[in-house]
Length: 148
Image (tube, rainbow, N blue to C red; front, side, top):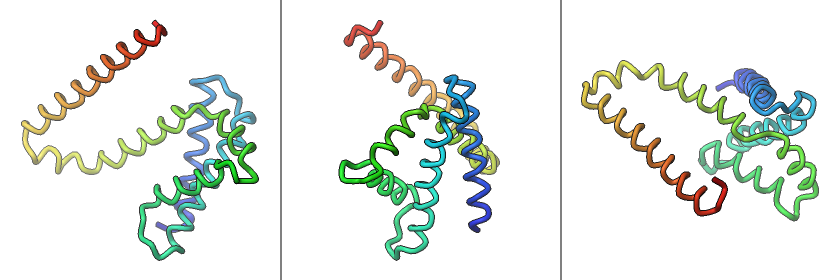
């Protein structure tokens, strides 16, 4: 992927995160801007490092390592990174991740349908089971902790 495409995706992601953070959590754009810029800078650094370092790891691994290094106790920018990132509710970026996943899967629906109707039934059962089990675990944990 060319760097212009990466830049476009980073800008689009930043705007999406800011919008989701504003609409869903009432955090103003200027309040969340430093955190968004830090997250995007870490992501961009991960992309660049993945192109430079001969070790072939996924980009997400490089982004995770860089993120850990910027927030670790020996990092000089630790306080600023953590304070700025705390203004981003991390379900806001998940909105964008879900959208990207949906877009990427949409190109593969025909091959999924070629698997037959049994795969669709299995998919529905897996999604339903995951939802019900997640809700059950959440109910148990919240009940034990006294949150509900």
